[in-house]
Structure formats: structure tokens, C-alpha cells
Image (cartoon, rainbow, N blue to C red; front, side, top):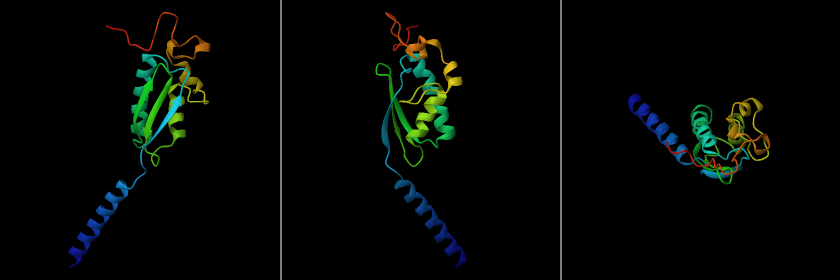
Length: 137
């Protein structure tokens, strides 16, 4: 009898856990503008950083992201009960990139390649040298 009660208790816990995961918040999209996200090197650098950050500190709350280099923006699909828009902006700042009106962390910004710096610092696309397309090797 005790074994049956224990079995029903365990099954009840598993069912509750499964239902709570199904009822989690619906994924949402946010678009964040970044003035220093204009070249393929910036994109590769940010992609690597976000993969690590998402797995380590964001409970895999970012489902996917799409970087538009010509517009200088990133669209992120995220799960609101795992990560917030502020968390995403903080991750961008910590990677060295501006996020809307929030400037990048100075130490991280200094580590960026020159082409990934803001235009006022000499970064971004140069005349007749587009940087949004990776070089052919």
C-alpha cells in the first residue's frame, strides 16, 4: 500500500512538473539597436559571447537571435520568465557593444577590434571597404 502511494506521489510530481513547463511564458521578440554592430567580425564575436552567456547565466532564455549588420541591430527571441530585456542589453554591453541608449562596458569595448568600434572612434564600415560581408578565402 505504501509503495502504491509513493508511486502515485512520484507520478503526480512528474505530471505537475511537465505541466508547469508547458505553461511557461510565451517567447517574445525584442529589437535592440547597436551603433557598433556593423561588421562580420563584430557578428562572429557577439555570436560566440551570447552562446556562452546564454548557457552559463541566462538559463538558455534566449532562443535565437538575428543580427542585421546593415541596420546595426539585433533581434532576440527570448523566454520572459527566464531572461529580461535588461539582461539581454547587459549581455550586449558586457560583450563590448552598445544596446539602444546604454553604452558598452568600457573594458569590453577596448578589447573589440578597431572595425567594431563606434563610428566616432573610427570604427565601422570604411569608404569603399564594406565590412558586413566576410572576406572570401
